[in-house]
Image (tube, rainbow, N blue to C red; front, side, top):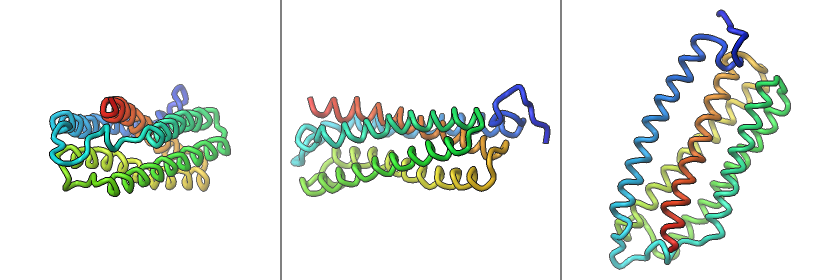
Length: 198
C-alpha cells in the first residue's frame, strides 16, 4: 500500500480518497432524506386538527440545551480531528470521548422531550403535524444513536491500533458524519422549533 506523505494520513492512500469521496456521495443521499422530511414538515405543519400546535408543546429550555450540546460536540470532534493530524493519540481519544458523551447527553434531553410530547398528547396518531414532527426528530435522533456506536468503535480501534491509514480515514469520515448531524440540527432548531414558537 503506497502512502502519499504530502497529504494528511486520512487521505494518504488512493483507497482512503475513494472512501472519503464515497462518503460525500452518501451524505448527498442523506441531504435528500432530510430535505424530504423538511418538505413534508412544511406541508403538514398546520395540520394540527384537534391536537396541539408547536407553540403549545415546544419548550425553549430543552431545545436550547440540545442545541448548545450538539454545537459543542461539533467543536470537540473538530479538536479530535486536529489532534489526530498532529499525531496526539491521547488528545484524539479524549476529544472523541467527550464528543460521544455530549451526543449521549443530547439523546437524553431528546428522550425527555419525547416523553413530554407524549404526556401533552402529541403522538404519531394525534395529527399530521405531530406525526411529521416526531418522524423528523426521531430520524435525526436515530442518526445520532448510530453515530454513538460508530464513534465508540472508532475510539476503541484508535486506542488499540493507533493512527494508521485505516483508523484515521474512519475517524475523519466519522467527523464528517457528525458535522452533518449538527448542520441538520441547526435547520431543525431554526425552521421547526423557533418558527413553531412564534
